[in-house]
Length: 432
Ligand SMILES: N[C@@H](CCSC[C@H]1O[C@@H](n2cnc3c(=O)[nH]cnc32)[C@H](O)[C@@H]1O)C(=O)O
Ligand SMILES: [Zn+2]
Image (cartoon, rainbow, N blue to C red):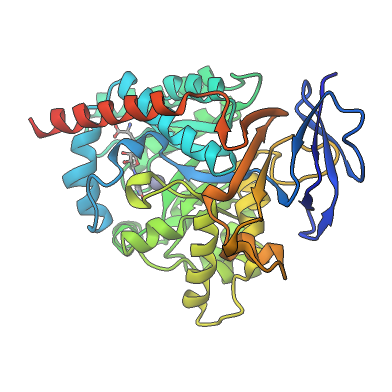
């Protein structure tokens, strides 16, 4: 057994109390052995956390990681026009190699901001899986399936690819990669395909993940055509089970909130994307009060425009208060929980808590900086004041992915150059 100790810091515990303690990890098993005083002495390796806060690694519950290539490419438009006029034409030109370059960039950004696990829906998923496995993160990945705009054969082919990919990548990277079946949304995949392919995903024993109730424009056609709310429609098609998780859940009514709570289906709240695309304000306080598992996600970098979960936590608290018209709604503790074990629980990963036996996924945040001074309340600082650049070290599965702000598993300059080139040629091809 090779052990790693994180020494001299303060540790955020699962009950959100903060204690001065060391954290001892089993680097081979990728597990937390102990959280307590003076654990550095006997460890094979140490990571200095003086003047720092040791937190569970952040879990980005909904992303399209290679969309980092389209960051700043098309801004300031509503969802439907943004996708149809700008994003989808550019994505039509993607290749496995452009997706690899975009994934490396996104993964680099996530490691640098203390993210240790994420869920992702995109194209060329085997390439994404390989890239993520090499970089050392944990992820639940899936191929986004769309049927609108395709003939029957192409739609079926896309859905079959979604199933095949889920089967192929599950368990890669020493088990750090898991999969899901990911129909894009309830309006971009026709009901007949959902009814046919969702049961096949159940046979593979993978969860279902999709965009739901993101904009009002997406709710209306389902209500008009089927006479029921989108999540009732999803439940009838077997897409609302305890292992499943939806992205957004902005426009949900009381009945749908009750359905989510009863089913145990998780909701990944994406406040920055919802604000930027003016999609609406998710009723996060009501979802949490109803007992729904709520996590946090950045969505793709083109609608955010970064992959920082610390920014997302702050946005979630701010927007949650505005949505509830109540400054006490969605407090600091709630968003810290959502960014860690809320997302992990929703996505079906065991990360998000620092305690003996848990996965050794953590971030070390430098507190010796003006904007984190004084230190009345470190949970408040995490929610409202800490930024991605404050992260010093990132550890996933017991392996150090970033030490003293230096990423160990990717060469930063190479990744940035490659991504810039790939993005430029992608946009040039899209403009032809
Ligand atoms: N196989 C599908 C690919 C879908 S991947 C997932 C898709 O979700 C898109 N996407 C990104 N952000 C959002 C969002 O907020 N709502 C809906 N779709 C989004 C993203 O651009 C990508 O096209 C196809 O044939 O088009
Ligand atoms: Zn999305």
